[in-house]
Image 1 (cartoon, rainbow over the protein chains, first blue to last red):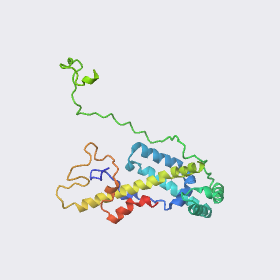
Image 2: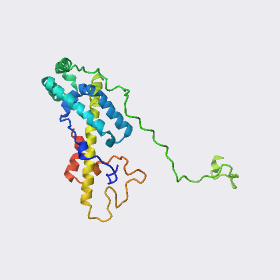
Image 3: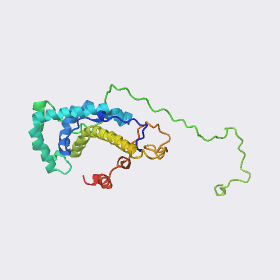
Image 4: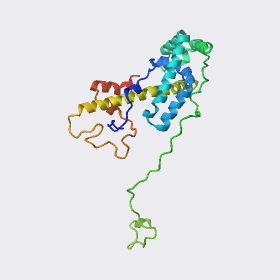
Length: 176
Length: 93
C-alpha cells in the first residue's frame, strides 16, 4: 500500500512485454475448460509461486510461460475448431447473463466432439477445477518467516518482587 | 448447483491467466508512475519519489519489499474523468 520509491526494483519494459491473449470474456470463459486442462501444469506452477512468494516481480517467468501456453492452445483451437468454437461462444454470449453454458448444450456437444476428435482434448468432469489439488513443483519451498524480535518491550518486575496486601483494602470494595 | 459448479470451474480455470496479465500491467504502471513523478518533482528540493520529503509510508518494511499500491496511488497522474471511470467500472460489468 505504498507508491513505488526509487529503492524498489521494478522489472524493465522488455521483461513485461509478452504476447497477451487478445480475447474477450465470452470467448475466454468458453475456452477456459479445455484451456485450463491443457495448461494445468503452468497454471498450478504460477498460482503456487504467487501464493508462496506473494510478490508479482518474482513470478514473471511462470506467468509468461502460462500465457505462452494459453496462446499455443488458442492457436491450435483456431486452426482446428474455429467455427464450432465461435458458434458456441456466440450462443453463450447471447443466451445467458452470466456466461454459463446451460442453454447452449447443442453447440457445446458439437464443440466438444470437435475438440476430442481433432485435438484429443476431453472436457474435464464437472467440478474438476473446484476441487483442491496437490502440485509437485521443482522450485524449492521458501523458508518460513523468521519469528519477530521486538526490542522495545517494557521492563517487568522480577518474579520474587515483594507484593504486600493493599494497605487500605481493595479499591473495588463491592467485590469483597 | 451443478451450473454454479460449472461456472465456478470456468472462473477458477481462468484466474491464473487473468492474474498473470494483471501482474504485468500492474508492474508496468508502477514504473510509469515512478518515472512520471521523478520527472514532475525534479525541481523540488528535498523531494524523494514515493515518500513525503523523505518520510516513507512504512518505517518497518524493507524498501524493496513488495507492498501492493492502492488504486489512488496508481492513478495519481490520470485525469479526474479517467479516475472516476475506473472507480465506477465495476458497477457497469
